[in-house]
Each structure stands twice: as C-alpha cells, then as structure tokens.
Length: 607
Image 1: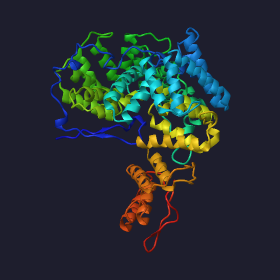
Image 2: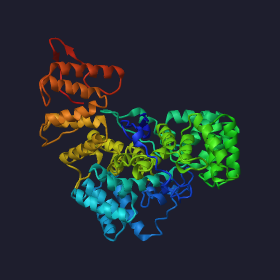
Image 3: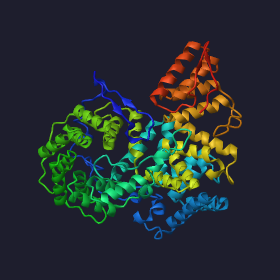
C-alpha cells in the first residue's frame, strides 16, 4: 500500500481541500492495449499544452465578451442580425439592472424570449437564466433546465456548464462527467501559456460578515496604490517590477484588463535588464504566437529559453523540452526532450513533472509506465498544474491506468472546466462592484452561480444581504419583495454551503436555528425553526474548523436544542472554539465565555 495525496485547493474556487488517497489496488496495468495511450493516436488537443490559440469568443460562443471587452473581441456582432438582436437585448438587461429600470428589464426579457423562440441557442441560455433566477418570469426550474438543454444542444457552452452542475447535484454523474469533460478540454485550450497560467483571479468580496476590503483594494488595477508604486519602480529601471507589471497586463491580473502590447513592452524591457522570467515568458509567446502582433518564431523562442535556463530558471527547460519533443525549430529528439523535462522536474517544476507524465503515459521515447505517469501527474496537480488534473480526470473517466471512478472524474473535470473562458464573468462582476454598480455585479455573479461557481454563489448571496433593496434584485414583475430577496439569498447560501463554504453553512444553520422572525442581514419569513437541521448545518461548518460553529454546537448541547443535553460535550466544543479562535483559523462572533458552575452564555448562536 502507498499513499498519494492530491490537494485540490490550488484553484481557490473551493473553500476546502480534497484529498485523494490511492493504493496499489487503484492502479491498473492494462494501459498498453488502450488506444488512449498510443503515441500515434489522434489528439484533440496538444497533450504538452501548445495547442493553437483561439480567442475566448470563439471558444465560448455567445460570450458577453463582445459587450464587456469589445476591443479584445474579433467578433463583429453587426454581421449577424440574429446575434446583433441578442446582444442588444443583453445590453438592455445590463443597463436595466445598473439603473434600476424595471420597464427596460421587462423589454429586455421579451426580446431575449423572442430571440430564443427563433432558435438562437444563446438567447435560449439567457431565457433559461431568467427562469432559473425568477427575473421578469415566474421562477420555474423545469423551464430553466429545458431552455438550457436546448441552448446546450445548439452549442452554448455556458448552458452545458449549467447542465453539468445540475446533473452533479443530482448525483447523475454519468451525464455530468461527459459534459464536464468537454468543457475541461475547452478550458485547457484557452490557457495562454503551457505553465499553470492564472486564467481568473476569483475574489471573495466578503470575509464573513464584512466586506473583504484588502482583497478589493488589490483588485483596483491602475488605481491601486501598490500597483502605482510598482509601476514607478519599473519606470525607474527595476527589472523585477517590469516583469510583474508585464505579467499583470498579460494575464489581466489585479483588476487590470489584458493588454498584450503593454505586457510585451514591459517583458522586453525586463529582458534587456537580464530578467530570466521575462525571457521565459517571451519564449512561450514566440513558441505559441500568444502576443499582440507576434508571429510564431521558434528561433527566438529557443534563444529566450536558453538565456533563461542559463540563469538557473529551471522552468525554462520545459520550453526547450517541448521544442525537442515536437521537432519545432530543432530536430525531433525524445531523449533530449526527456532530459530537459527531468531537469525541470528535479527542481520542483510542476510543468516538468506533467510533461514527464505525458511521456510515460503515452510511451513517447520511453517504455510506457502508467504508475510512474500517475505519480508525475499527481505531483504536478499538487503543485497546481491544471492540465495534470485534466489527465487524472481522463484516467478516472476512462478507467485507464486508474480504476474507473465517475465521481472523482467529475470533480476533477469541474475544477479544470471552471477555468474556462466563461470565468471572465468573475472579472466583469468584480469590476462592476468596484465601480459601485452593485446591480450589474449581482446579475453577473448570479449568472456564474447557476454555472456552479461557489465563490459567485457566496458573493451573490452576500450582496443581497448587505445591500438589500439597493442590490437591484428584480423578481417576477418588478423589484424583489423582502421575502423574494431573502429566499433568493437563502438559495445562494444553500448552494455555496453544499460546495464546502463554511460561512454559508453557518448562515444556513442560523436560519434554521432562529426560524421566523430572525433578523441579522436577512429575515426568513415563514421559515419554521428546526434545531436538528441547524445542528446539521453547524456540524458541516465545524468540519471546516469554524470556531463560531463549534461554539454554537456547544450551546445546543448545553441547552439540549436539536442535540442531546450534554454539558461535557458542550464544554469540549467551547474549548475547541477557543483554540481555533486563538489560532485565527476562522471568524468568531462570540469571543466571550463565562465559566462558573458550568457554562453561562451571553447570547445564542448567530453570526
């Protein structure tokens, strides 16, 4: 027996890590006969991560990129009158939630439905969203699923995300896994470079009961003081600052819009200063033609990789290895490719381990060895290599090298799929929130929420609770009533809690604990008090080391509310809560304990 531990925390889209423990019995030795492993088998994408570049609006048809980032979109919506009509309706919908114009939202919903009836799959996806949210339409989950199904059949990938998430919630993994597999492949094609490129920066706009001011400050782009200081240092000739600024612009990080021209300019200036990471990135850009006006040039790519590797930047060896394994700009040589990948892997480079995994999985220049391939993929995944997750998902999905496990395959595919081009919704939502356009931010987070993004579910719920009527929440025929808004917030918290969000689980527990008449950020009118369900939710939050949940469970044991009366167990939970609070692991709203003749509490659970 042996343990291989796989942590899935790297994406920051989950709020807890998932640990995979494999034994010898989980591995299979029948890889040689499987067509999946053949080095001559056709590849739908380049296993080494250098597939041809396609813009987001081609990978994600119907994307709102043409609205939010028209300068980066090659799609001319005026050429197709059907799409022009659809985008016009979407713009009207976004304008309506920004300005609180109910009549305009009604018009937008009518136009989206009219386009959907004609068979426009992207309008059908939009209509499914409106039915699912209950916005200008009576909330109807069956109709939401139906329209998303039609949209998915017509090629809308965001509706496929919706269906995959819906199927997985219903434990229909045989359907979910195939959809997530398709979406994960699109996500892999969208990665800008072969390394573990950050496709999105998911920002949680709250840290419990308060706004996450520090994270929001760092997302203000050129307005952020830290960015301005860094830019000043770059302008004064600091090579490391040049590299960081270039990276921010290249990937669109820290609240900046992608600007390849600025990125390349900064990288080039940094290279003149001898900055090795900029050399490597330029090598990647030349090898893949991933820059504004840059054509593929393997000679320049080799030069950049060599310069970087000479300065002991071991990740640059991956670029060299790739050129040799494919024979681009050099004579194909699997032995040299393997040597370069090994140099990278021996120096803790995740991409090097991933590439070695591909070679051993497919028998490229080496004898096939599925166990060794699996080992390399898990090591790469633990270091945050998204393509390694994709390979492991395929192995679980197809039963190649690993025993078939659709649940694990679904989870791994989903992690990769959530990095696809549709994840740009997160950037647009955050930009809107930072500009004070709470209505637009809420709508965009709601769209992401139905696609299964926990962080969007949490953000949407928090906006409803925090901003109440100023959230511009719209219901069936106008602005949401208090009841509609609170029910919608509860739905989002519930979904987030089911995906491991401890704060969401705590809020759900509070809702059941207090029942009707509970005010904190929200009021659950008509909800019956249910201590047992409250305890269940608190136990879920407690499993994530949440001090407040531990305190609440202690209180319920002390008073026999939904849990057996047990002072000793109550004291144990109180002690655990105090320990966790002292370690600073989570927020805790009840830091006071009065110990005398048992336990006396000042307040009941709530946070």
